[in-house]
Image (cartoon, rainbow, N blue to C red; front, side, top):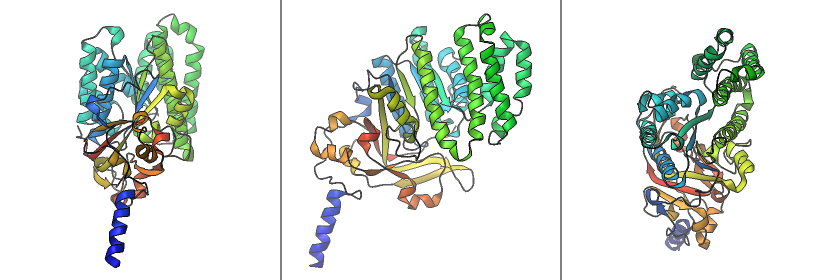
Length: 410
């Protein structure tokens, strides 16, 4: 009896998986190798987002590159917005559009350790090489939609002011002297006031500045000032940091989309963490960037999530502050949807034609989610690196990597 009961229990667990989802009717016939996926259901959307379950896996950066390549080459996308510093990404844009610097220096300029990798440099090098072979109107342009850095925003803002208003440039440089990347975590009401006053002055002088520069140059410079302003507000937000950041990142994507639309570039690729691009906002107690974008763009927002079985990634060790490797694993029923494909792409609309697949995608399960800080003890606590969510509510498509490896730091 005991043996029979054990056999039945094992069979039941095999069928349902640890998430309690019946996997016996799941099929992998809808999966496509990402390199061969057409992305045709995403092609006509205004905003296509590609996420990453962790920031420190090379396969997710490679998936991002494949998605960008396909949307650019085959579907007319010309704008890429990254979860990175706006000022730093403007420096990276100088590389991919004009060839200034190198792929490695461009990756380092993005502002976060997660991008100081060989894989990110390879992505930027591809965009640079693509741009070298196309006319100006078809060149891919980079933007950052985060606001947690000051230095490169200040540098580019002051460069503009020195051209159009040297006196104001001197005053702005003095007023913003205390705002640096090295001291960005300091909370200071005077810094907030200085940044807000600068934005007010920029807007008040718009008419004068437009006589000495193009409208585009002015708008880009103003956004550098606004990014500095948001950075000071963010540091002063305390417990509201995450909610404010996601709200402002969504606003920044809307600003980027508007700027590009004025030049006839109506489609935009957004790259960031799964938690930010997820349409259901499952990872946070507040309204996420992805949930805001889904509300703004409706069916014109297409979110591609990523997932792993086992993941070895590079992240900041919360105990030491150093960057190191961690490994986590999970038994997800979604793995059955992908079979043996090492980098598989699944369009939910097509996969859902099978009842078993639809049930899995509509079920509440735990999916991998790791930010840029981790502790060794978390590797033994699945709730510390997974989030409860319904895949079909969060994403329109999914990329699955059964064994994800670490990025290569520069």
